[in-house]
Image (cartoon, rainbow, N blue to C red; front, side, top):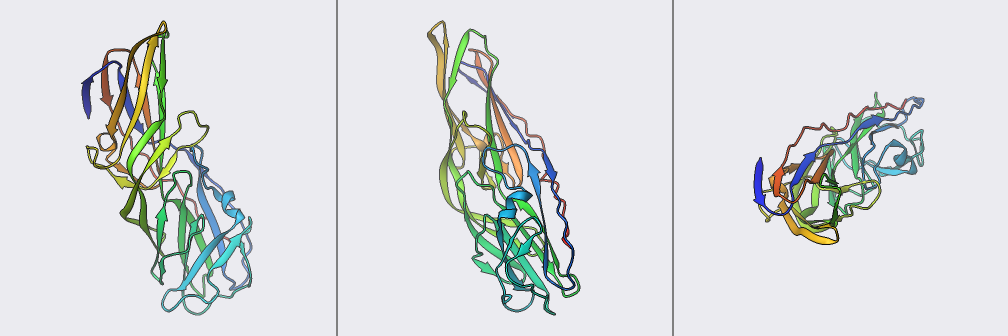
Length: 298
């Protein structure tokens, strides 16, 4: 889509889906019918928040366990940690009935849990990557293969100037408004997942001068107006110490990217090309979710 607005600078915003990933592996010997855990996450390299990778989880996380049919497993939750993914207590031998295993990192206790799914009330601050995994086990296959997936959308802004070198450009931080920041997440035992409707909205600031990462925000949908998420920033242009232009730009996110998806990174590139016409020219390229490789601990 393309819109032309008369103004003082040529502004091009390109929303790009951008993140590279690799995967980390661990191995462990199986002990008869003892409950074991195998853990993997996609390793990402572009972020402003601290991203969760496999080694991050070694500090420990809790697994909430429920009989596939029946009540809560008597040893739930299990505290899992270390590169061998040992849990505190036990060893616990698998019961005859099947088990469902649920985990979110940073650890959050589920609001509800049964043999089919666990639900979580999640509020985001923008600076924390949240990953989740689930698995089922049986008496004949007691290894829970936990492949953690990134639940949030990763948002980055980049400002580039292609103007005359004699023009000095100053751009404020990016202010995001009307952003969904709380919702219910349902984690079925098949390691899928679905977000419920938003229960709250908030404002976030993207610091252009910060090192590293982007904002970690809820997946959500936008409309092409300011009733849902939008962002603003202010810029000034000077030449030979004379202000030649400046404005406050307000842009509906729905005009650029109607949807933020889980496990997807969005980079908005703001380019100033000179004191002419402000042009919004936006392209969205598909970017797949992390390639997740499950590592079975045996």
